Amino acid sequence: MGSTSFMLSLDNDQIHQIKTHAQQCYPQECCGLLLGGLHPSLGDLQKTVDAVYPTDNVWDTAVSAPLAEDSHPKQTLTSARRYTIAPTDLIAAQKYARTQGWDIIGVYHSHPDQEAVPSECDRTWAWLQYSYVIVAVNQGISQDVCSWILNDQQQFQPEAMIVSAPMAASTLETDV
Ligand SMILES: [Zn+2]
Image (cartoon, rainbow, N blue to C red; front, side, top):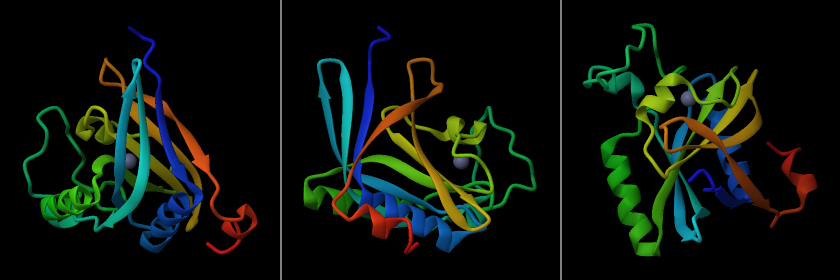
């Protein structure tokens, strides 16, 4: 108990994809899925991202859908503050992942002009074992990228990110 360590491995290309998507959607929240593999070993929960799978944020059109019983989002919430991935996108992603031998291992989304820290809404809708990667976008520029995962108490804890560098790091920061 209490010794579980979570880790998410991804590469700079994937980080770059997430940051770029976040900037394209600004000032709305972007969202997408992380496809890859789950590697539980010796109590650790390690995941590797094999692909970033961008989806549309359909929150504005899904707003009339039933909400979780314990969440009371304000009526003013829009896709600038929330995200929803369409079920059809989820199914398509799952099918695609299976053809590659992957699973959906997490979700990413952006926080326009907010910190890369999960909101109460994020927590309410979060699924166990998924990684929740959040990118903060300040004034249209993607900044911090953090990953979070639910612990046994259904609270988010930071998840370690292991970022490998297939690209020259110098090109990454300049061409977004
Ligand atoms: Zn959020």
